[in-house]
Image 1 (tube, rainbow, N blue to C red):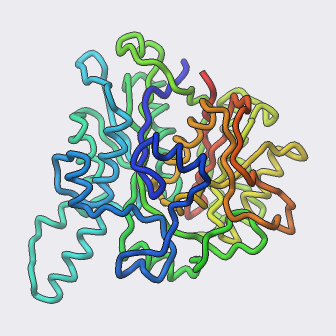
Image 2 (cartoon, rainbow, N blue to C red):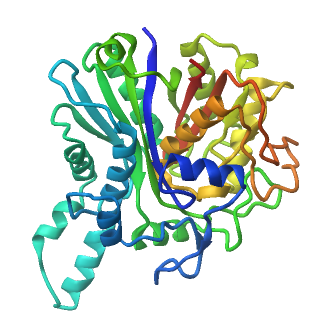
Length: 391
């Protein structure tokens, strides 16, 4: 049984929908700028300019929720688009997040400490699971709803779980992806790890120093061929492979040798029934931290040997959107498949000395692309790879 993508939606610092996102990718326009909020103004971040209230009004949302939930609603609504709910098509939603409703609860807690207010209802938005329920409510989905929180591989793992739910016959159609909004908690947490770069991030560059954080959301709609006969939808891509692997090397760092990355990529290829030579482009995890990029580079070289396909990290466009990154980059991969484009690794100038790998430096068109590997590697060695293929 094949798994098809029949819808996609995205919002990030480079665009509020798929069309805007494609234009930004083509123009090599980064969304990473100096932060505007009090807790981001010291850093370069991929912020979305609209406030929560502006997001509600601009996109006609029906709920007042956390930023994570609102961004998820916007991307999920675009993905679901003209899909219709039906009793004949069992539809579920699986959303990945790591921040959840932290942005509203941290404000409420500060107000409480200052004796300004103490509205316990605000904290109902805090739970990661609540964000998924609110996104599902916006779409009218009342069946299977689940939340994945495996750090930066969350969206990729939600895509993988969605595929398995379809293969096992538990669902006919599923909306999958991830969402994360920026919060003071997120900024402080990553600052404590000392992996911020005060300049623009430089994935896979010898001079890389760390990440630029970002926010956003992206979702895909997955269906089987049998379901498409009922819904009449046409496929955008095939989800041909997926895998999750853990190297359990460290709480936050990846193994220097890239063991987990290697296992995830090899396993995804096995599920897809493909050889390394079949991959035409890799959308790498590429966070621009010294540890991640070296580890992933070793993994790529182990899997692909001397024939590494074109690869790049698009986090130099959006910043690292954490749990949303695997969903956002899956949308980028589908655009690359269908438009025949290679996406550049912005800000690259010098290859990592230990591996010598050189990513795609400039946007280009006219390529024949049949299979794309997209990597999402999370804290704790939670490594996931998915493969998207042309229809």
